[in-house]
Structure formats: structure tokens, C-alpha cells
Image (cartoon, rainbow over all chains, first blue to last red; front, side, top):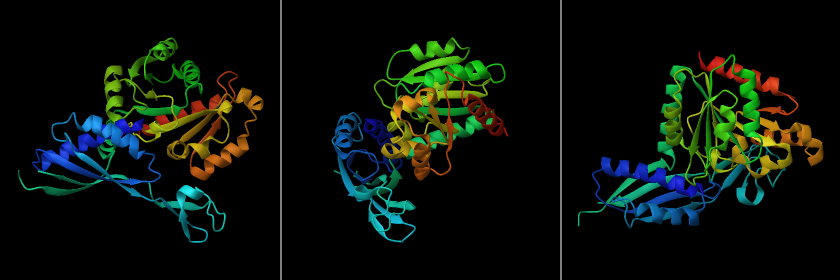
Length: 114
Length: 222
């Protein structure tokens, strides 16, 4: 359940951004969430609803999660593959010399408010 | 209603924790206190390892311990019995510690005179790996009964650790623990981690751990 901890940190950041931009209410927050970020969207949404409704700035705010597929590149053969299906080992050539290209993100993209 | 504004934030969800952790790390560096974040599953032998470490090093280093658990204070009592200044932190249901909770614990502990502080994180191989506490070094302990396949199942924990301690080596044969395979599994995730097999019970490998601590404390003070 690290989702609740993550939501608390998100809310701190959002309250700071809201203050800096003179917002009194935030209606929508868009989050880029990678497939292998270790954050579960369903849990995150549950925690978000509970915690956001306790903030004056964020009461009722919608959390829109944009999921990002995880892709790994192989340094040995140069090809890419779906991380979730094959993990650390390249399905094309069997090498373990591979690097995650994307899919690890957990980033607040934009907010909408007034 | 006012006009709706769209603001681009583009910030990691844990960015504010990362900033707080970095500030804490710099402050501890200035005062020469090495904070070590100890992470593992429940029952890996963290408290036993710590007790032996306090017995061995308390005459040469001034050591503090922060014990984090969801509840209870049994661990803080145990390590206090071994001569360390100790505080118990309760996470109130949370599965990990973050920089703010760590800072609060350090305030309670009082770190001015301390060379070394152990933060015994909540027993869990997932969440503690995600949150920077402000520690200078991350150490994870894997006990041999847990199996040599754990780096494959909990990759992030092994990726972020500076040192991997393999505890309970005295019972490794009973659990078919393959140290060579374990090292391969760790290396695949983290080529730079130091791996130390130890047994707090027989003393095997403990000198290497103490030496690692002495060197880490000395280099942190420069």
C-alpha cells in the first residue's frame, strides 16, 4: 500500500503548485503512469479519492491516469521489446544487457483549475 | 466561475520527498553523521545483526538506532540493551518510511554526537525501495531461508542497494540456498552492489561488515 504514501506526496506538490499559481480549486489532475512503475492504478485512485477530498484545494478533483506501456531496449542486438512480457532478458537474442526505455514513470503531467 | 487554467507540472509524484531527502542527506553530511537505511523482509534477522554490530562497534563509534514498525516497541528495547541510543518510530499503518518521518525520528534521537545511525525500515521488500529517506547508504538484508531467487522477484530493492547482506549463512544448506546463483541474480540487476554473506550467530563474515561500516563512516566525514 505505498499508493497512500504516494498520494500524500502528490497532494503536497499539488498544493504548492496551486499556491504558486493562485488557484483556489483544482478540478483535474493528469498523471503519467508507467506499466512497471510499481504503482497500481486502482489502489492509487482509491487512495486519491479518500485523501483529495480532505484538501480544500482538491475536493472532488478527478485523477486522470494516462498509462504508459513499458519498453526495453537490448544493447546487444539493438531491438526493443515489451518489458512486461519478457522482463530483463531480450526475446530476440537472449542477452541480459538490456535497459528500460520507458514505463517507469509516475509523473504529474498537468492540472486544471481556477 | 473564473476561467479554467491548465498548468503543466511535469514533476515526479515523489519529487517533494526526493528534495526533502536530499536536504536531509546534506545536513547529515555537514555534521558527519552517516545514516544507513536497513531494508529487508520481516524475520530476516535485522535486529539480531544490529545487536551483534552494536556489541562489536560501540567502543569505537557512537551509534544511534531508529526502529520503524507499524506498531510495538520491542525492537527499540532490544537494541537499547546493546548500548545504543534508540527510538521507535510508528508508521501508523504505512508500509515504508519517507524523508519527513525519518527527519522526525532523527530529531527525537538527537544526532549531534553520533557517527552512525541505523534506520531499521519496515519489513517489506517493495515499498521501502521506492522512498528516499535521506540515508547516505542503502543496505538490504536477505536471509538464506528466503531463497536465492528474490532478486528476480523484487528487482527494485536489489537495484537501489549499495550493499546486500546475505544473513543466516549458518543454515544455508538446509534451505538449498545457492550463493553463486544468488550473486548472479543480484549482478544482473545491480552490477555495483557489494555482496556480503554473514552469520550473526557464528560470526562468519561479520568482520567484513564491520569494516564496510568503518570505511563508510570515515569517508562520509571527509
